[in-house]
Length: 379
Ligand SMILES: *Cc1c(COP(=O)(O)O)cnc(C)c1O
Image (cartoon, rainbow, N blue to C red; front, side, top):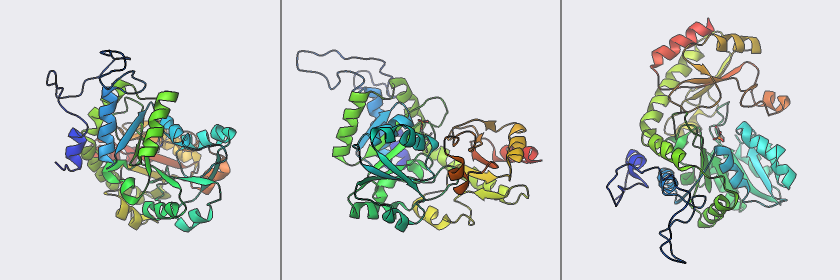
């Protein structure tokens, strides 16, 4: 039977236990599985290779992305690392210059030492991406909306260019989640998520997942799960399965509250600039409206200086100063010194990550309380 998104969020990949009827997928805390005889097993051998709880989560999120294969890892970074392991020394990757700081770090500080080549470029104009393609280019790595300036990349346009050149296109879909945006439907080959954020949604585990329709890529990623071992634990898979069930209702509320807060921030004199794809002033507002269901729960705004940002953050009472995003609680970060500290200052300034920039992950609290908190801290 075909299922719509919220039905899939609750049911896809899961079934009542055939032996006892348990409705919720149990946490299979087992490293190994009894084999009835030599050369036979019941589908499982060892939990680094596969585990029933992890399998259920992998099927669930693959279904939400409208993809065939899901492979879960112990963190978003472990998932991204596995994707780069699809490449060989000498291969070139074009990545967005506003990717997650950790993606930049693993590329520059680890993978370049193993012979991969990276160019980080602005991807707002698809033609610039085409110009950056070299003979040895094998992959394009997109993140949209991008972190923290909420830059939007045209998934369909980039996927079209990539396929003309036989390149693999990857999209980090962490900020949008499959509820707001499904990159595979726009022609992207590989979707990656930090489960740590909205998909789990409760700030109580770390995880990552890769989803693809390509049997060849999936087979290699499964081999990497087994060979390298950066897999998601059964307990964390169970927590995340619990999270994905409420993803649609959470994303609706995150988006609604974020829109109200973004509009409120835009009217404040002390706020120099607001970055939110839902605002008509956002340079790619129309593209965001085209490829996303709503504009998500992430806003950045510029208070003009490090001193102003520091004073503001110090006075917040409900919003918590902490890295990460996508939880039920509102979190605020200072990208220049926290999430994006590993990006050189010249690049940071070029892409708008100034010392006065503050990023807010709008939680599920009453939006009136959040605005009151922001208001008193601004004062
Ligand atoms: C957090 C994050 C990651 C890394 O995920 P972890 O689970 O922290 O390893 C990757 N991409 C984006 C966009 C993120 O926000």
